[in-house]
Image (cartoon, rainbow, N blue to C red; front, top):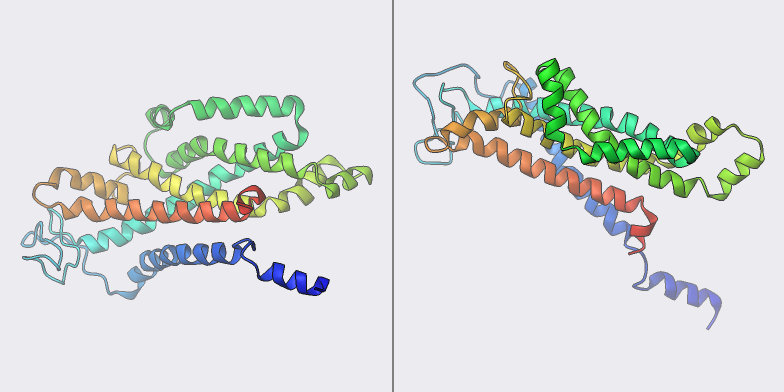
Length: 295
C-alpha cells in the first residue's frame, strides 16, 4: 500500500479532530444571541411595540396567551398598567450594553497585566499574581458594596465594579497563555535578532492571544450581565428611570402572588442569555486552547 493511500485513509479516519463540529456548535450558539440583540436594538425603531404609558384600567393583565390576557399586551402589564413587552425590550438593550462594556473594562486591564506577568516573569509576575489572588479571594458583593457605599449608584460606578471584579480572571488566563507563547521559536528568534521586549510583547505575542481574548470577552459578557442583574435586584445597580432585566426582576418580586409574569420573563431572559453566552465562550476558549482541542 502506497504512502499516499495511507495518508488518505488517515485523513478519512475517525481520529480527525472535530474542529468543524466545534465551529458549527459555536455558530448555532451565536444565533440566539444575534436574534436577541437585533430584537432589543431594532424593534424600538420599528414602532411595532405597544405604548409604554400607564393604563390604570389594565393593571396586572396576564400575557396574551393566558386566560384574561390580550395580545395588545403580549407579555402582560404591571401594577401601573404599563406594557411589559416594551419595558422588557428597552431593559434588554441596557442589559446587553452593560454586559458588553463590562466585558471591555475587565478585559483591558486584565489582558495587560496578564501579558506583562507571563512574559517578564520574576518580580513582575510575583506582584501581579499576588494582586490576582487577593482579588479572587474577595467576594464580589463586598467589593460592590464598598464602592457603591462610597460613590453611589450610577452607570460609571457599575462599570468600575465590573472592572474590579472581572480583571483578575482575565489576567490569570492571559498569563497562562503568555507563558506558553513566550517559549515558542519565533519569540526566541526575535530575542536573538535584538527586538525590544515591548515590541515582542505588543507586536508579536499580543496578536497571538486574539482568540483567547475574544473567548474571555464572551465569557465576561455573561458574568457582567449576571453581576449587574444581582446588583439591580438588590437595588444597587441601575437607577430609575433606567431599567435593566435585573431591575425589572426586582420590581416584580413583590407581585409574585398576583402577577408572577412581571418577574418571570426578565428572570428567564437573564438565565437563558447568560447560559448561551457562557456556552459560546466555552466553545471559543476550547477552540483556541490546543490542550482542550486534542481531547
